[in-house]
Image (cartoon, rainbow, N blue to C red; front, side):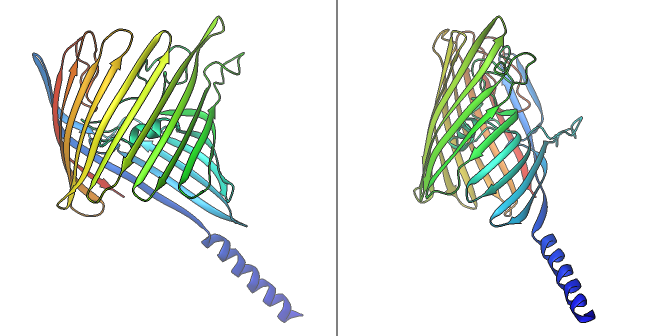
Length: 342
C-alpha cells in the first residue's frame, strides 16, 4: 500500500513537471534608431528618429499546451522610443488572449486590423521609416465617431478568428465593438483578409468597414486593398493597390516595389502614388534603401526618399522625425540607422 501511494506521488510530481514544461513565456523586441535629415523649401530638420527600419517594441508572449491539440496564448506588445526612452509604457501595439488548435485561432483584445496587414506585407519598406507606405487612414486619422480613424492600423475591443493551415490559404475575420454609450454599432469596425501563399507566390485581399458619426447620423468608411509578391531567386517584386471611401471622399494608392538580395544584405526600392479622386491633392513618393546584416539579429541600414505633394496635399515622409509640410510643399529625406532584434 505504501509503495502504491509512493508510486502515485511520483507520478503526480512527474505530471506536474510535464505540465510546467508545456508552458512557455518569451521576452522579445526590436530596438531601432536612425540619424535622419528631412528638408522642405526653406526649412530642414536633423536628429534621431525612432524605428527607421522596424518599429521599436518590447513584448511578452506565451503559450500553454492544454492537451488534445488545444493551446492557450497571450501576447502583450508595447511601443518604445529608443531615441528618447519614451514617456510611458503601454501595450497598445497588441494585447490579446487566444485559444488555438486544429480549428484555427480565436483571438480577443487589441490587434492589427486584417486589411492593414496587406499594407505592410506588400510594400518594400513596410510601414516604417523614410520609405514607409503610410497608407492607413487615407481619408482621416480622426474621422468623427470612429475608433481610430477611417482605416486604422489597430483596433481595440476586437474578436478575431484566424483560419488554420489549409494548404497555402490563410485568412482572418475580425469585429471590433465600438462600446459607444447607447449604441452597438457606432464606433465599431469589421475587417476581413483572405490570401494564398505557396512557394514563391503570396497574394491577398483585405477589406475594412468603420462605422463613424453619431446618433444623429452615421458615416461608413470603407477600405479595400489587394497585394501580391513573387520571389524569383534574389528578386522579390511586389505590387499593391488600396482605396478608401467615405464622407464624400475617396483616396486610392498604387505602389510597386522590389526587394533584392545584394551582398550580405538587401536592396529595397518602392514607388507609391496617392491619388485623391475628389480634390486632386495627390502625392508621389520614391524611396531607395539598403540594409546590411551584421548578424542574424543586427542590421545597419540607410534610406533616401522624395515625396512630391500636389495642390494642397500635406503628406509626410514615414520617418518619426518628419514635419508636416505646408500645402503643396515637397519633402526630401535620408537616414542611416541600426536595428537589433531580440
